[in-house]
Amino acid sequence: MKLKWKIGIAVPMAELIITVACWLSLASFREWVRDWIYFARVETRLMLHPPPPRCKMRQAEFNSQADRLGANAKKLLKMGTKKREVVQFFESENIPVTFEPLDQGYEAVGTIYLAGDAACFSLACGDDAASIGVRVDVDEEGTVISAPVVVGPMYTDCL
Image (cartoon, rainbow, N blue to C red; front, side, top):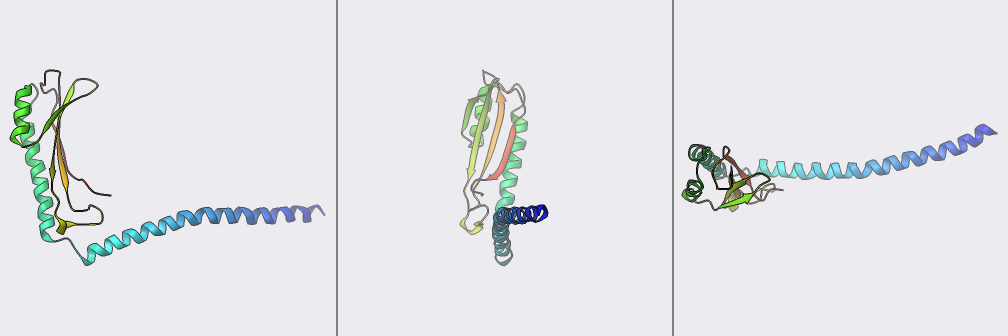
């Protein structure tokens, strides 16, 4: 009699555990399938409609502009450069500059925004708009105390 009683409890418990496990895994499985379908659509769109050549040229222009900006920043914003020359550098590159306080000292920060092209629209990064940022650590008087950092190009409307 005891064996029947144990089986009578064990079978429904096993069924309950299997049901809960299936229910929990089904939600994650549906999410995985949804992601797979989304990325498959993006890949199919890129294969059927590759970006125009001018989009690759724009990307190359963005990269060369960031490289040129980085080279100029390393050349002109050396350690010991005074605030007046820091501001002149940002003005010569048409980058608005702000001096933001940090835990120790300040940071001169400037960002330029590059307009996008509607022909380069993609699902992942919108209309290809980008930004390039320059930052350099300065002391209280605005004298450069570290090497400049150029970040970018970073696409601004990516998912």
